[in-house]
Length: 332
Ligand code: NAD
Image (cartoon, rainbow, N blue to C red; front, top):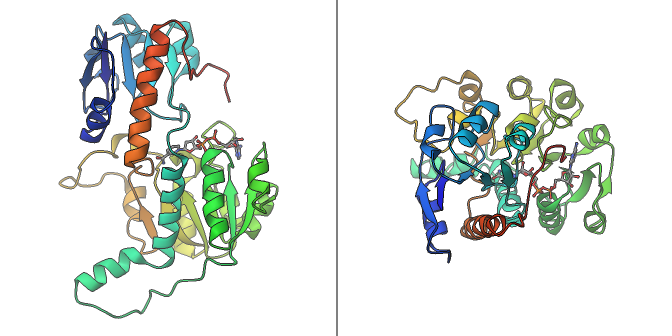
């Protein structure tokens, strides 16, 4: 059986080849992103294995189905990039990796908070230039600060647990409160109240029609002046041009992004020799109080191993006629 892995990097190849798998699985690793122009590469592949920035819109799914594909095996937890009604209509089964390491993403969110607060990105450059001054590097104690967690599922809970360890006061917002997060002492509040009270806000909810641009000009205005915003969820949870305005006015004091609304054609590629065409991202990168990482929160050895193991298990289960970890149209 032929399985094509789009958007696969060397670390994906290493983690998949390290897993035990049936002899007859032919894994085709392709670095290119899945999009209308590359869908033909999947001709004759029963399984297409895709990542977060692959295009799984109706025209692409139609080409895949016409080429013999029957299973879309996502290497991600998020599935907001798949046109599920079209997949269903075409008889394509869609499976995902619901959990691989909440620690990987939660710890990256914490890394962004610590780096922004203690200006590690600036200090790193400064000492390498022989500048050992400290001006502009003043941080704040995390202890006692109010941290707002939006989305308290697996990753949000893990993040909340770490921040509780720093001695932070936890505020939470989720339509389905998590008792384990309440047990950490978190207070569940309406979204607006959380935004008004938190000094640090971290996004851990999925991207859905209800959460698109959850952070927008009005919500930024509600936040504490100089607050910190961390987004390791999905880029479109925030209205990015509004972030630029809030940073310019000082209303937003710190910004850590691991995801970006327009990341699909930028992230995971070395574009350092090319002029950056995205003016919003270019402007964001000029602020000293902004750190952007290129969707790397998931990137730990443990998470990669779990993604490979679950994906291969998903393929085996589907092959045996009992698919697991299915995603279906209408699923929230
Ligand atoms: P999860 O399903 O365990 O938790 C999501 C939580 O969000 C749930 O508790 C749900 O009730 C809540 N939620 C749903 N709608 C909401 C809303 N309108 N407002 C607030 N909360 C809402 O998912 P998870 O494993 O914790 O992952 C969360 C998200 O993190 C994923 O959907 C994905 O987009 C993102 N993610 C990013 C990376 C990365 O590398 N940056 C990696 C994995 C996941």
